[in-house]
Length: 264
Image 1 (tube, rainbow, N blue to C red):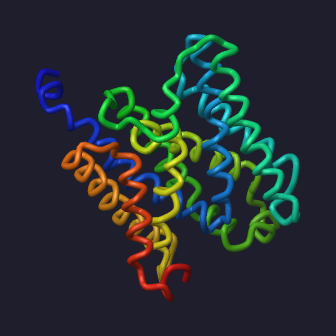
Image 2 (image 1 turned 90 degrees about the vertical axis):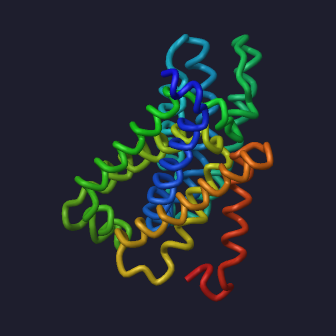
């Protein structure tokens, strides 16, 4: 413990690295399933759960995961992705969720550092934050080990997968739960808002001409780890918040990619 307390940067760096590996791998799956909008929804739905969990004196991350998952389920039950109203419903729930979270804070008389929740506070991260990251990492690995082939099938042809007996609803629920865990675990690194950058940018780089989902995930994770660690190091050097810097590095890396390769 004395070694860790002296070298305070070790835990934040570990969280940065594992978040940089985990978020892009998760984002790669979500992009191939055309479910990235759901990530934005879940990230905003986390706040009411955090507020209620603090008011009930339970682990805030548990409340965040539950409320994020409930938001995703609500959106899926209200409409379908093929429906032209899908994005409107998702955005309405998104706005309502963050509004509810902001209102609950004064109503319940609790104290939450909104800036840290939304944009991260990596330099004050502790062992509990690292443990949450490991739990999310383990959940993602479990999902890939037991459901990889089915997830690939659903990503290519959801209706065809259902016709062959794949329980699409169950796997979508598992995907939503794992996404919520990943988002909550990344709160200390980049916050529930800026996590969208890590879930989106490295996969755009990794998916380019990837022959399989596995290779795309590996590429995305490598890009994500490099981007995250670079952002962290820049934050240390210039004494700036790591979360926003990691997001800026994400945008810069996308801009530097040749235009013809950005979306193919």
